[in-house]
Image (cartoon, rainbow, N blue to C red; front, side, top):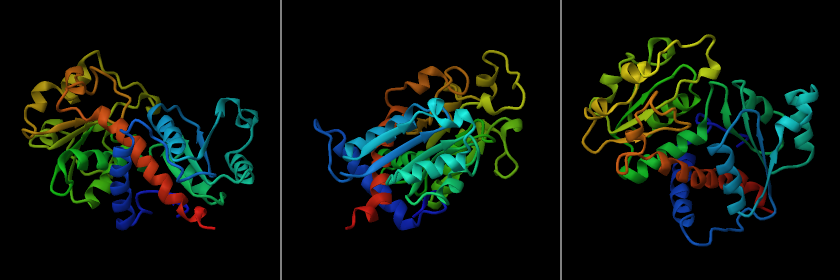
Length: 300
């Protein structure tokens, strides 16, 4: 596998990542959390956009598997001197890493890099394109909580137009047998997504409500919402959540804009919020992804 993407993963690959992610999740709750499974391998992180959860979880995942984790300091790299992304990839490739994890603001950039690299490439988010490992960790989180994904009603609400998380989740969760409902402001609901834009309809009876922030950094112009307006019209409030299924849960890929797309009390709810569990599962699932992609490189 040259590039980790949802479309590029077989059903067997997905099952393996979810199963192994669950195993690594248990492993990560032990007092000592170190494996030598990837001993001798070098994993490079190249993040051209800001990240907290994804970058740190990949670094921790590689370290816990015994690999050398190296993070490229983009702000101090030759990119700032005019070097092209392709030339940067050729430079990294010459250093013979065993996997490259890349986040970039241009949709399709990871695929272009994968064509240059001799090692597997993991897409850690490309523009408004995809974020496959986020979808995998979301699926693993849902499965750990409910014991299944098939048959669940999952509402994904917010800025769908710019959300790579939504695009990857729509593909993956549907493959796993969930009914996916989509909602958001009309201006932020892309034409290729089936949804009526009504968060009230999407949340009604949902087992999982996944909220997404407005990606203001990708907007061509200001959204123009007054303080509290977005939450009232399109956000997840206690009144809306009351219409979800009795045992429903709240998810969010982060970062959260509290009081905008979600009420703080729901984001922090001790029983219904899975947001912190998502972060914890992120390390485990990314361990499973690194293990799967580098397996052939350990065969001597």
